Image 1: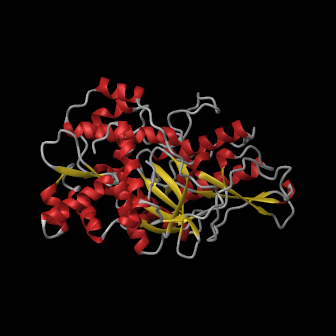
Image 2: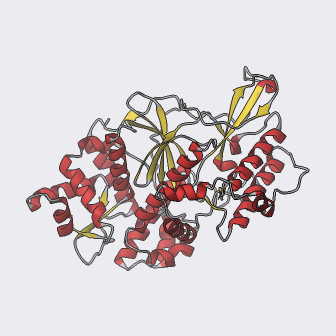
Image 3: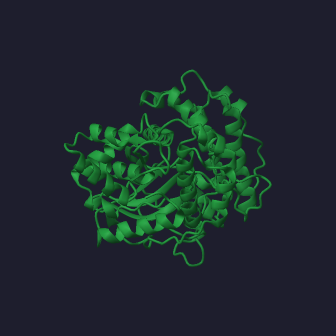
Length: 466
């Protein structure tokens, strides 16, 4: 879903209390009864509560379900986004929100900035988002899901990523700097780098390949397997080399971030840096699927990480290593009793094995299994695991909302859902800014009535309950 912060300026303290009350009630209720909202919020007089509920519903932060058995509201992803952003604003980790720079099946990425103007990355986990290409396969699970599971699981994914990122950063691994975590969101440093999948050529593929394989082995020796180590989750930064030769090296991410570049080739003819003086610095991102080397399927995920890198370098850079492996059994043999186990350190941060198991089961049920392409799929064709476009993501959100409403009402049928997907037409309005523009403040809006009217018209067009 699209993150729209324009209405934040017009929410009163009472509105925030009511929104928080809906979130608290969602822990035990799929649809939070209106009297319970009033009780949790602690506001005097029923009129004030109903006014706040009306204000929140107008901007899509809470929603009413059609044909519900009782009067109540549910928290939307927009409402959860606002609660998380409000926490970041109070902690002064986020002052303004800019353009969206990434979208996937389970997360959205935005450029944000603090009060000093330093740009950062806001990652919003959305494990409740369903791909309309696999909606039939997910129907049975969605019908039997527990109350508030999408909120809880998205929060677990954010907690897990923040915990792993913090531990890896403290131990010298090249990952972004974690800054703050609230609910299902993470704020981290912004890296001036190219995603590996967007790079068309590099001076010395063997050097970068060796660096990435070494990173997989180093993680394993510390008791961790990334689980989704591929071209989607590796950023490559280019720096002038002091030796005058093309090299590849790993280092900690700079704390002075800038906007991600959109070029697709390193050291080309238009660059002022010659190919012989470029140092390539890889940075690893995206950790919700990271697991311990003691996991039952650790060998499978380790081999998949290695094969993903091998396959990508063969396809893109026409480079194939003469050395076989590395193999999981060899890594296990080299691990000594004195090896520092980072998986144990992660548990010490508060992210327990029970939480990891719950998140793993949920991600498997909703079909989140990384961004890896299938072996038989052509490189130019996008398969179901590749992140959807902005338009597709917008349509997916509408289908998801309709599925959730229909499940609660108990009246949806598969043919009706298929008809909705086939005939759904939504005009997606672009709100992205240019890469070089500064993010806009959270509370910047010209007219709140325009915001309300736009949300109403979009919901009516897509069949949402208002």
